Length: 286
Image (cartoon, rainbow, N blue to C red; front, side):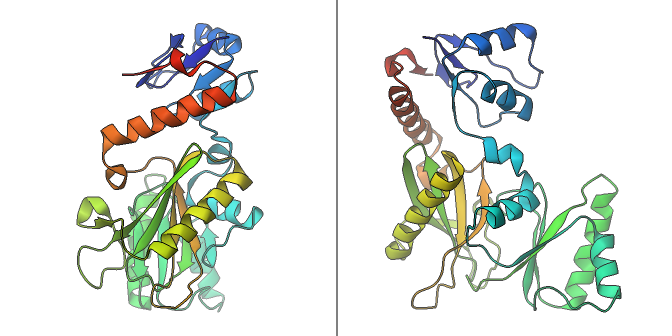
């Protein structure tokens, strides 16, 4: 029984630090001989597919990550798996939205709403659209981005969260929740790296509901390593939790920092290996 690790922090029977290079023939031979494979969060589609098509058990499960890429892909994922989410419309380009509006169609969402650029994460590329002038300005910025190949985006109804986003992090069989809250009152877009703050105590009942909702997403999709962001109308007495996005790369501050995160992940990997009838003691955390 052979455990193969592509993860830079986990040693195993065989460890390969792939980095940015493509898979070699030797790499593929090792994949074909493995019984269990550990992947890095920076896993490429090439690496995941090679491992997924082998006979080995693979952790993490990244099938939906590559089948439904980006924000527009996730919008399709939420629809197909009946995952509650805000009303969302995907656009291939600014030209598609402009033509849609010139035909006399009303905006698919009333003001205010969010516009989110595909392929960006952790609050980047998110715009809060409050009026038509605001929309024209943001579309102008997007047209400049289109020159570099960034085209698709989505528009999404705004949930009155007042910038408070509830995050549930799935790590193996466990789920960890906390709030991302704006650093200043009135902020609608919260980014921890830009002044937002972590709050692990606020509205614990909603945190429990988010943990249960994240586990349901995990059961439906197979996801076992990701951060799921939820929106809720926090001033309502019994708000619905709506999934905003799934982050496969996520900040670790809300989990206690990088060192604690890797300890949690290491324990989750050991538990997963035991479930595969592998020996957990054959991996080490560097």
